[in-house]
Amino acid sequence: MLPLSDAKLAEAFGVEPPKAIVLFGPPGTGKTTFARAVASRLDWPFIEFFPSRMGGDKNGVAGGLRDVFTAVNEIENVVVFIDEVEEIASKRKGDPPSPTQGVTNELLKLIPNFREKPGRLLVVATNYIRALDDAFLRHGRFDYVIPIGLPDSEARHSIWSRYIPKMALGTINLDELVTRSAGFSPADIEYAARKASQKALEESVYESQVATKETSTTTTEHYLWAIGNTRRTVSDDVIEEFEQDIERLGRL
Ligand SMILES: Nc1ncnc2c1ncn2[C@@H]1O[C@H](COP(=O)(O)OP(=O)(O)OP(=O)(O)O)[C@@H](O)[C@H]1O
Ligand SMILES: [Mg+2]
Image (cartoon, rainbow, N blue to C red; front, side, top):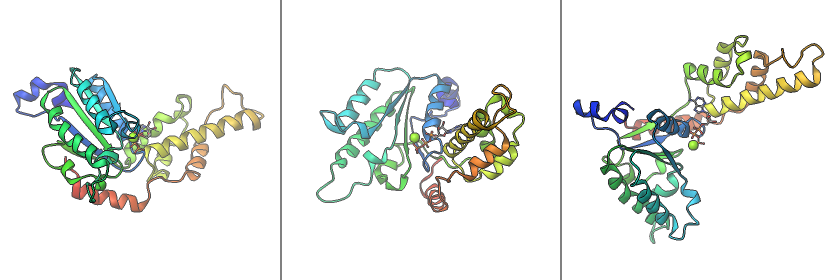
């Protein structure tokens, strides 16, 4: 962040600001959130690009990509985000070449150009980094290849705090929720928190004789019930593969 937000300072220290980064990790771990947060911290516009929605472009996905990068050239500061990049940059194989090969080639051509001008950051995200073309991940294209994994207990603590209503926060046993939600992704926590709130609301409206809508809210029991009824998205196998990917492909 610092070399991007203070380019002069970075230059004084001989630090080269990053131009392009890869985020990878299991679903729902916060890759999109992270990319948005970078743009928001820098106070730069955020342009999100979905390869899966470019199919309808008259020049195909490759043409759509070119148009986006041409348009982006006009903007002084910008974060460009390409989600599900494995759709357009997966391993080039097969004879005859697959249709996506042209798109992969196009993207590989566009990146050096994008890197030339300062004040811009390209962020690409994938759930499945091992499917990406080797040329895509070669040194010189992306400055960092950053794993985004499951939240540790400190991170789970802060994610839970975000999704628990303010008026309930003081009465909830957060440490218990943090322990019991080990292995949950941020998306799982959000889901469980919503489920708990929903149950508490239903109880308050339909069951409780004493509670009034003003005083009753969610309790630790509601959250523990919701945790017990939420399936972890990221299995142990996926975590193991992710660890291997970090070892083999991560670059920080
Ligand atoms: N640091 C965070 N604090 C609070 N909530 C978060 C955080 N990171 C992610 N979330 C929540 O978790 C959910 C999933 O996050 P996000 O969409 O960024 O994950 P992702 O890695 O991009 O998922 P996918 O691989 O499916 O695209 C979102 O609803 C988001 O609000
Ligand atoms: Mg995402």
